[in-house]
Length: 200
Image (tube, rainbow, N blue to C red; front, side, top):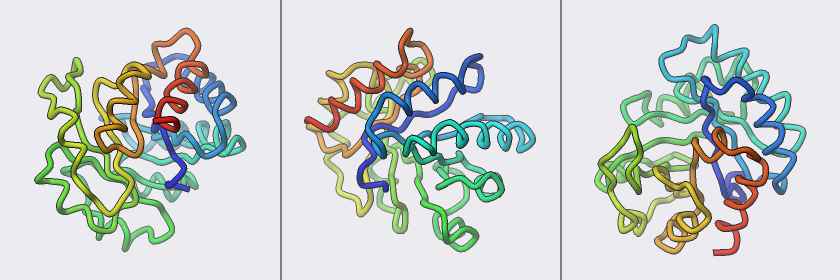
């Protein structure tokens, strides 16, 4: 499942039509090419659980796995496919012990930090380019690092050109937020990114 994922779409809970956009994306792309990560930073489980259930309801039938950010308990309760761990969150080892049936991803923000990702299925590394919230990019050269997991570039990947550049630098997949939630046609936008990753 993880080996086919080209684009990780990270949710923006402030997006009023989020579920409709997830549905449009899942319908527009090849099965298994997109993973949806339910992320609602600073919101409690009472908010994240129904959001995760709603995302699963529209995504899974089209072959898009759904992960929950940070909350192993919510991922298990909602029936998600995996959990994504922040760099300062629960350890991969502890998450694996608590939820052996879940796929596990993790975020890292430097090449040095990537060295402690043993046991993860996916490693998200960035920001590769500057973003409004993370202006200290580590650059595409960081993607040459080798890890025993699928390497996913994140940060400032707002076009197929940047997606191709990230893959040429060593990424197996990319992660996006703004490309999904600010596009007039999210299905077409993410489909173009999937094509860029898959054909690079």
